[in-house]
Each structure stands twice: as C-alpha cells, then as structure tokens.
Length: 280
Image 1: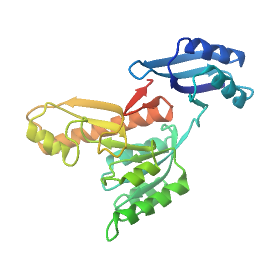
Image 2: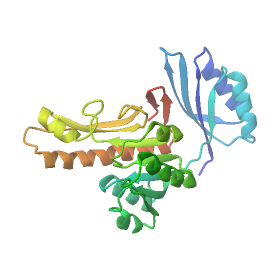
Image 3: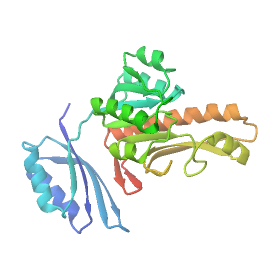
Image 4: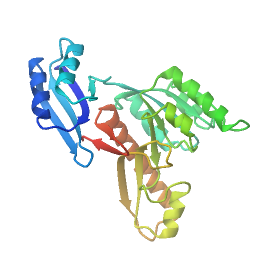
C-alpha cells in the first residue's frame, strides 16, 4: 500500500494560501492527490484537508515550512493517528453499543474500543463477550461531582481520542465537559434542534411529526446544542405508535453514530465555533 501524508490546516484566510501550501508540499516531494478546502467568509477563516502520496523525510521541517508560509496562529496537524482510540459511556440501551462492538470485532471501525463505562451494569455481560473491559460506575448514593470524578479518573487511564456517549443518559457538568473538550460525542434521538431533552419520541408523537431523526454532535455546556457532525431523518406517518417510532428511531441512531465515527476516525471533521466543517 502506497504511503500517504494527511494534513489538516485551519487559519485566517488570505489570498494565495492554496498555492503556498502546494509549493511547500512539492518542495518536500509530496504529491497532492486530494485537496478539499472551505472558506468561512463571514469569519475570514480557511480550512483545508490534504492527502498526498509520499511521506515527509522530516515532519518537523515540513511543519516549520508550512508555518513560515501561513498566517499567524495557524493550526496544523500532520499525520494524526490513523487509528483512533475510543471509550464508550452507556446506561441501559444496547443498540448503539452493540453496533459499535460488532464493528470493532470485525475490524471495520477504524478505531479501537478500549473500554465501556456504564452507570448501570446492565450491559456488562454483553460487553465482556467481546473481551472489552466494562467499568460499572454507579451514580446512586453519591454526588454528581464524585460520580463524574470517578468516571474522569477512569478515562484518564485510557487516553482516548474520542469518548462516545452511546445512549449515556446523564447530563454532564461544565467541569467534566471542559476536561474532555472536543472529545465528547453524543448521539441524540431527534433531529436537533427539535425536541431537545428527555422523551423526544413522545414529544414528536404528540406533535404529529411526519419525520423523525437522529443527530450526532460534539458535547458542549449547552444541552444538545454542540456542533453537529451528522444528521439523518426517516419519513413516518400517523399510523406509527410510540413503540414503532422508537424502533425506527433506534435504527437511525445506529446509522448516524456509525457515520459520525467514520468521519471522525478518518479526520474529516473540523470544528468551526459551534459548527463543523465536514469533508466527506
């Protein structure tokens, strides 16, 4: 398999950036095979994802040469880890966990599931069938601060690239979110911003909606309002009862979370304030 170099760059927009980047890469004997760029004109920000054949003889020199040609405070990533490490947080629902563990077992996830942490032990036996460590951290009879501290201490031992809230039905504190900033990914069982919070399917049924959906997004301190990665919908009709709506919704949730993980593990998602730039 031919060796490749991946670059991710964010910086202030200027005339000639693409040419300058291309020249630096050519000087390092790197041939561009794919370049996807986006300019946020309102905020004068430039984003680019570049794939090249070849590998730099000296990655530090390549970064220094790029810095010299880019605006101040440019954010440059060269060859981030091509296989991500993830930890899953769960409660009782199994569908998203099961989908991820099966993909992990058959090595189609482009990531390694290091562990599962649950505030109930309902999913422990299932998880351990895949030889994945399961940590039961109960939220009962302890303060929110102590509960989150216990989880945070566990997470720090794994050094995961992403922490997936696979139907983890707990609202996280600002301190916890801040500690794992830009690593927490949630799957929300509705097409945000509609029906945020609890019982979205009941909310949707009572409203008589004709579509339901799911949203994968980064977690921030604003409940269910973090930068959106993937959304998908499904048409329904008045004949759907609540059970049928939930069943259909779970299928969408699995598909959306799986797609989001694919994009994240392939470094196709770049944050832009409360939005994402997604290079499919």
